[in-house]
Length: 226
Image (cartoon, rainbow, N blue to C red):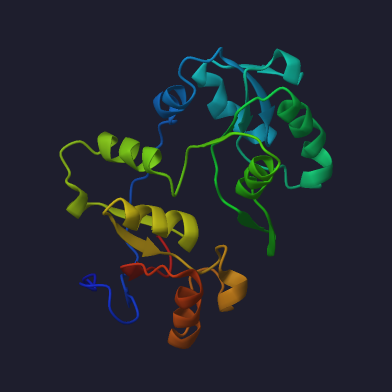
């Protein structure tokens, strides 16, 4: 079945049948280097150890003591920890030293094992609320979309559709950059609000209520990617 295009953003978004897609697999190294240009490359790392495999190619020196760092690098929250108890002492020391914080994953919440938990974006918000300087790189901020469009050389924005499960980051960011956006709600961060599971689409009433709460409307809905 052919995809159904919604056209202007009026009424509930219509369904786009699942299709194969190729994701950008290259690390956003150049974008990160732009964000921390002019600063010594020593970072106080805050994040899950699983992220280190793609941080290593960036050529940063990760340090454990805030006194040795030029900035804080925040990528994610270790799901096994209490975020405030685990990270606040290090962030407090960084604040005392006026270190800027680079948040590479602005998600405010993440769904883990069926539970909605704090995301690294919320931790970055806390740092800012306490008086710290936060640099954002990631959805919904423009730089990550600019980098993606650059990788897709030869394609105009009218031929690109961004996919994601979160309205406030994935979808809003794409729409702000003039890209089409497809929401994949089943199994994502809105799963509990919508009562959906992986591969399921919500009913129209629940979907419209969610869109009204967030003030964001995607062009398409996808049940899943296959």
